[in-house]
Image 1 (cartoon, helix red, strand yellow):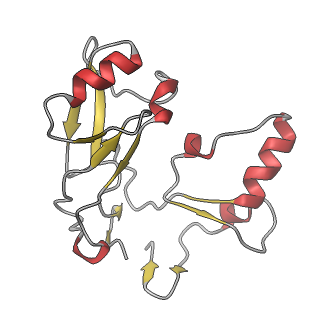
Image 2: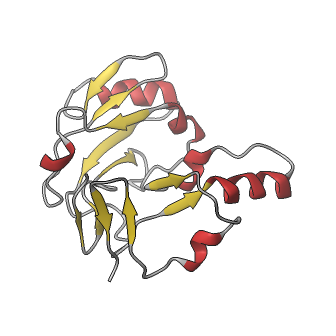
Image 3: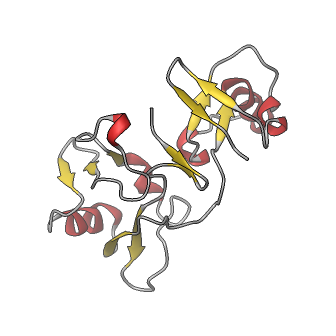
Length: 160
């Protein structure tokens, strides 16, 4: 279980990359190549992930190389791959305060969107906390705001 707070899931959006040129948050819309990278909290068991002070993540490059967040070579490797210098930033309070949010999508919604657009849509574009395959119509998750969601046998997220 990943503990939550009144802000959402622990560790969500606590680490970000800044464009070293203009200081703005670097997003996948500004640098689509970011979607080839992946981050994780491999050293922390889920029940030890402190929402107020998450551990440093590891970052996996497209070639499989794994970097520690505090590794001095990470920014250079990202900059080379993305074609522009970047600066990692850690903020345990969160980079984008979405307040009491847990972002959920369903596979039915994903497939419906792909059908409407006539092309595949990469799930990473949604930046969801949970993507669910369940017996529900497309976009059912839009009606879940303010509800209670049990995930598996161990985790419960309860937005107020």
